[in-house]
Image 1 (cartoon, rainbow, N blue to C red):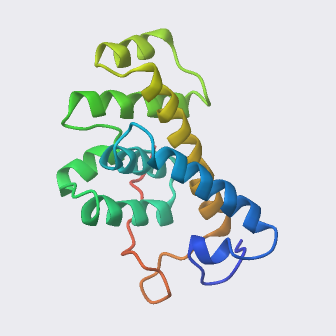
Image 2 (spheres, helix red, strand yellow; image 1 turned 135 degrees about the vertical axis):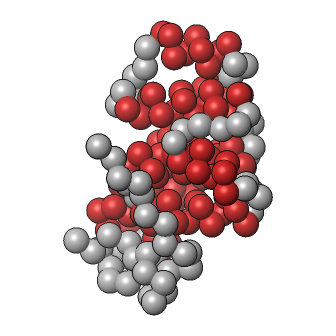
Image 3 (cartoon, rainbow, N blue to C red; image 1 turned 60 degrees about the vertical axis):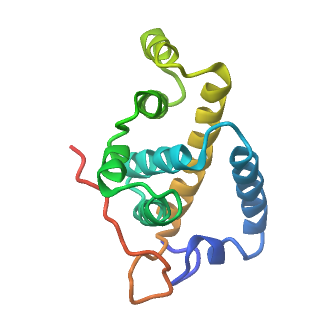
Length: 166
């Protein structure tokens, strides 16, 4: 099902009542962009969530942004898609986000203790949840809209397909 044929996310959100969703998306994105979790970690969080949700458009966009803007190497991008990182503090934030997503908003005490033991603060936990909410919004929106990722359309990012999940 397409909300608007051949559109990227920003183009799709320009129409009618979808502007309300765009306003929320932009406000939350800006608020988190001004937060304590740095952009390269936010890109990793976006990659992990897009992979988990099978969102090809978001995976394509965040792979491009992770490489070109956040300057992550190919290995670190691939690790992020599996909710992992070579940096232990970042890996803990990714694991926490992944656990919360898979638990539909909950996680066990062991996961929280593990994150805190790796140096994740309460403020970071709050921002992990905020980033997860933002990423789920965009993943679900783009999955439902079936946003184009074909390079022969107006898509601005090279397509990246989610890994097969069992």
